Image 1 (spheres, rainbow, N blue to C red):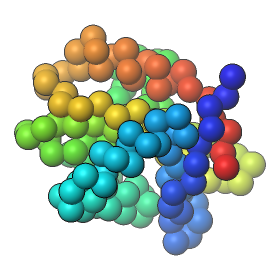
Image 2 (cartoon, rainbow, N blue to C red; image 1 turned 180 degrees about the vertical axis):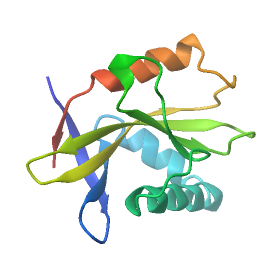
Image 3 (tube, rainbow, N blue to C red; image 1 turned 135 degrees about the vertical axis):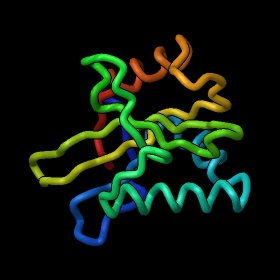
Image 4 (cartoon, helix red, strand yellow; image 1 turned 60 degrees about the horizontal axis):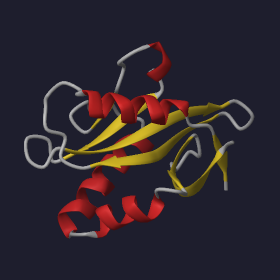
Length: 133
């Protein structure tokens, strides 16, 4: 069964969009909204994505195996709380647009490498298929 993704933002040229997983939206939005620090970081990461820039310090591929090649992580406060929002990138050929879906929140990643806990989340996000609203 496909999961629902809700539209949040679109780039000025219309070629990149950010969506949020409907089932996890409340948790992710509550996390982003909890302080000005979190809102600013979300805004910064979103702009990097929408402007198609590369900054692996805040948004990078989680390339742990062949099945997870479309999973990325928004990295909040690396070296501090080290929180993550794991995202699925989808190429929609029907409308020639890249879609990033903020799929799952992971609080306080504790290790530099991905532990078994992170690997389970990344593999789960990789398995998601979405319908867009």
